[in-house]
Image (cartoon, rainbow, N blue to C red; front, side, top):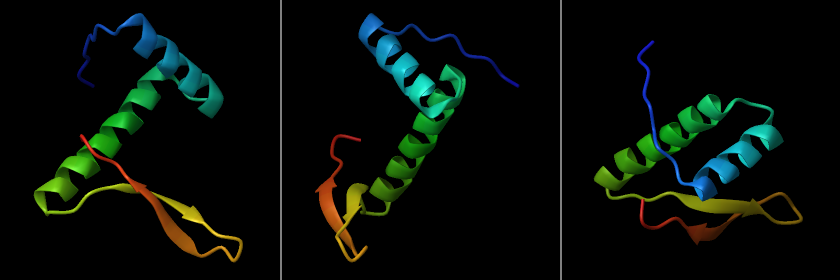
Length: 71
């Protein structure tokens, strides 16, 4: 498997560590998941779409909370 060395700010490393602990995954796995989301966002942007945040109401019906921009 190819390896990559990345320099992170202290703030990003702290947040990455927090997320990995909360999700019970390694920091490497958290980065792989982040890349997967970025990959989807780039693909959908090329198709004229965007990604968003969806919630569920009391009847479990989905509704859009917001649009993710800048990705």
